[in-house]
Image 1 (tube, one colour):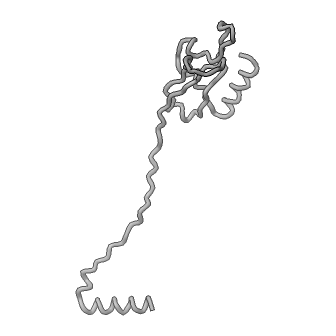
Image 2 (spheres, rainbow, N blue to C red):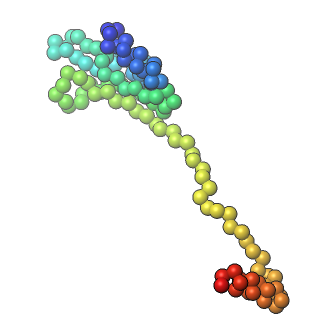
Image 3 (cartoon, one colour):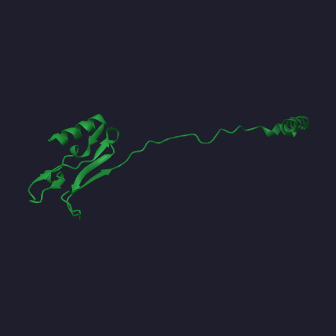
Length: 121
């Protein structure tokens, strides 16, 4: 590992990140992301980093060598299945149910009407 690799590892440790390519076992050819023009020298210099709390969502990280790009880098692909937390919030207010059967009594109905008239006038 060179100086840049060490600094990258320190940054990941400082920011609570995990390097996705180091978790899953693959053949060396599926991990190398960069090829020199001589087609012999290969390195793993491109990475996918995620927060540690999402580590269980990451299913696989691999290199797609057949991508049609004019570059000496191969495509790094991560497959994830994001597991979201359910957020239950009560959006409806509890409504108070009134017993309107007592309004059938004439005296109660008149008193209620008088109270409403006084309240809204």
